[in-house]
Image (cartoon, rainbow, N blue to C red):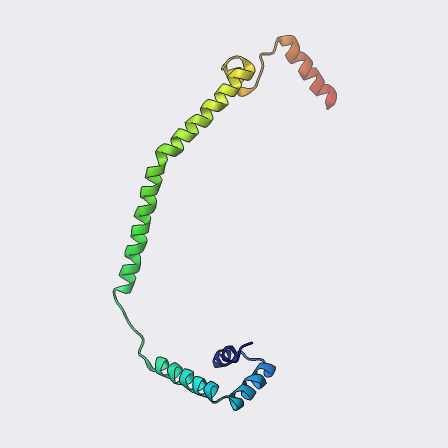
Length: 133
C-alpha cells in the first residue's frame, strides 16, 4: 500500500497495527509526508468548524426534479403505447394465422384446441377415465 494511502486511511482510524507501524516509520523518514499529514489534519479541522448549510429550497428542488422525471416517464409510456399495441396486434395475428394454417379454420374449437366429439367418442373417453382410476 502507498504511504499516502496509509496516511489517508489513518485519518479514519482504519489501520491495522502492522500498517500503523509502517506509517510511523514512513513519517519518521519523510518530511514531505509529515507536511502532508499536517495539511490534511488542518483541512479536516477547518471543514469540521464550518457551520452546517441550511438550504430551505433544497427539498423543493428535489421534489421538482422528481415531478419532472415522473412527467417524463408518463410521456415515454404515452409515446410507446402505439408501438406496443401494434406489436401485440402483430403477435395476435401471427397466432391466429398459425391456428388457421394448422387447423384449416378459425372456429372456436380450433381456437381452443378442442375437437368435436361424437357421443361414442365421448363415451369411450369417459370409460377410459373410469378404468384408469
